[in-house]
Amino acid sequence: MRRVISQIVFGFHWLLNAVAFIIELVFCIPVLGRAAKWLWNLVLLLPGIISLIVDFILNLAGIQLEKKMRVGVIVLNAPDVGRVAQPAEIIQGLTFAERVFAEQANVKMVTIVETATIAPGNTAPWLRYESHPSPPAILNVHCNLSAVLEDLWLAGGHFEYFMATRWFASNFRRVFGLGSPLIVFVVRGIENFGGCSLGPLSDYVTIVPNSLICIAHELGHACNLPHTEDPRNLLHHARCDQPQLTRWQVAVLRASRHVSYF
Ligand SMILES: [Zn+2]
Image (cartoon, rainbow, N blue to C red; front, side):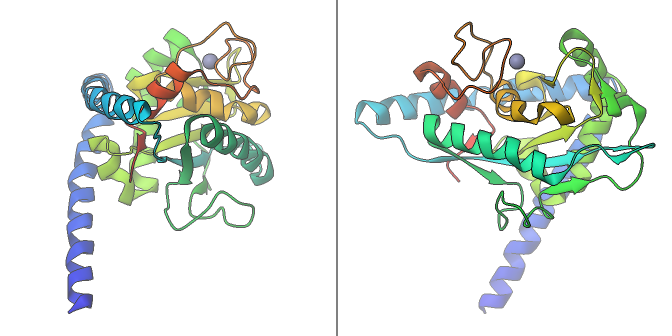
């Protein structure tokens, strides 16, 4: 009987993810699909207001419950050198992010594959190396307005397709904003920058191999945090190796669609 129930639950999950996968394929279409994804992601900001209120009330009672942030990493492949980064460097960047979010915001960073942990030797399920040369549109990218335009055009479609196909079982969470996983794309180059995020518009951040310590900073942007002027702050505009977050930053981060109780 228990086996039948678990098969029904599995089938139900598969069906939800299949529906979400089809929606994701629509979001891969340049311009119209990408614009629809932006609009949808902006709508998904609204439930965050409820989350803010719940957190605020609990904080008044001196309670801050642990929340989770799911992450996965895709390392792109360059035709001349193959994979553009190595596991040890990536884990170092993620370990810093894991520590900052846990200590500052009581947010536990977990992998997109829930049975795995962020640790050397346990990388296979959540750290994907592209085995074939990656499309030029995502191998070398830009930041700021150029990144917005790229997301609307070919790069955005490619990033969305990679996220939807590499971890099929995360599509429901991604589309419906229930702890949407954040995907770190390790790209070959970002003109004039070490990392980039489109904030609430996308579910991914980009990072270059020699700036992997900036993963935490970019994930902060993806969870709706803007830059600050405080040089000790994680979101300082010119550096990204500092561990501090203010109380309002913690509140905003915890209200993001990428951060959930379960
Ligand atoms: Zn920044």
